[in-house]
Image (tube, rainbow, N blue to C red):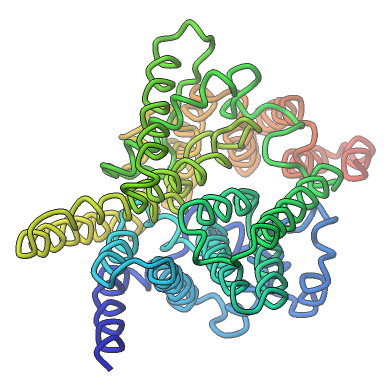
Length: 496
């Protein structure tokens, strides 16, 4: 009963700051992925999701992540398009992650104080604002939940090997169907076995079998993604002006790692469209500074594996969960606050371990102070999502090179009836990133609405030239040509 009471108190404290803003409108990717996604409106499409057919259909938004789509269909059936219901689901998944993290640490042998402190600091970490608040970014939360559940299942293999192996692989597969981040699950399992072999099967052969089976599962999914017609992030296709290109992907990785660690340690100010300047050569001081930082971080994890295993696990967790977003395979967006969400449990554990070394009265006050600061930053971060204009104004102020922020501010100006301001924002978007076509597309639509068909056609043709595979650019160009009576030209573009 005492442990149950602690658990309920833990859940109440963790959930409190996240309850603010449940009624805020859908913003950013929530609009395209949820509010305007006709695929979710047809409940018959549910069968395509559960049978995995969306994996092979590039036209389905989030088709590569059917586990996420399944939660979207459930929310659409329960809540319609009421944002509060969708956010409650995301919050419950987040609380599940925190609970599974606490439970995993207890299973490995941590005392109640360390486990609850690590869970509390993770659950209140401000880096989770984007992933937890915006249902369109739920993939990070769901993937972490399934990975943690999978690690629990693999640990059960100590008592019931076959059941633990089957459960771990099933949950690992679901995690991979939620997000590509789960490719690192074999590494996490190997680290846990190395630090706490007693928590897993006694026979070394069985422990090896668990890691090997998990590795084969991850490799199989990676091979599947390579042959599917849907694109794997920024691999292939037209360059969007933001993703890293080889060899920038190699030289930038250490700097990205140091940046992630810094954002975990001080996650403010948050930004939905942060900027990252690529490292272009091995001669850059940023490459060497990042490399030295990373070597020190990994060295501290390795050096503490015997005397300070909890610190070692926390540091190693951050490194392993950074690997999927290291941009060795380039991502569409090299950096994003939501990428930090799966790494946050490791940082929380490392900090909780440090606080646990303080005298008993001091550690309580230190934990309370850290939790209060984190909760305040969560509230401040969520407040910025109260409306589109506020969110994107903050994003533009923090990154004046954000073409995405400029486009959304242009759309907001259009909604307010200020076409002149909208044109200025779209022009800024084109100037900030000439390779991102959404500024030209929306600008071309705006000119078409004003009857300026020549300007509209020019902008839309530029968009098609930059991104030939972009269906929205071609669609609107065909509309523009039809409005000018050029039906044969339009028909060819419709067919394409």
